[in-house]
Length: 91
Image (cartoon, rainbow, N blue to C red; front, side, top):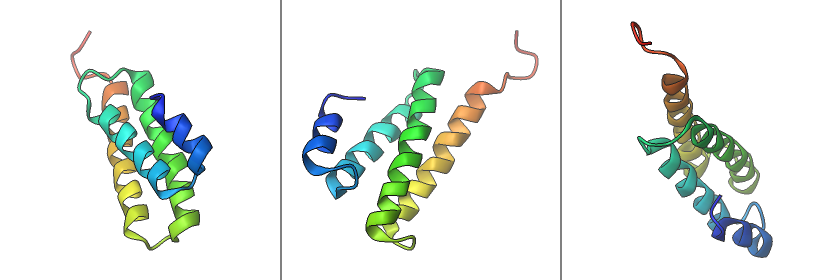
């Protein structure tokens, strides 16, 4: 994770709005990166899932930020699954 996010977590807290959004952006950048490794994609999924739990506690389940996390969790899982699944006819 970038050096800034742990500082935000320590200073602001795990569930602070800024910390949650920083983690979201970090994870989104990783799963959208065509050069991301499998480890990067797994980290993106885990980061989004962890952050979504914090967002749910802070905002409640119906908040648009929580819905945004859920959307990106689905996208990051799909990116990970696509990378983990060998292409047909591939070596």
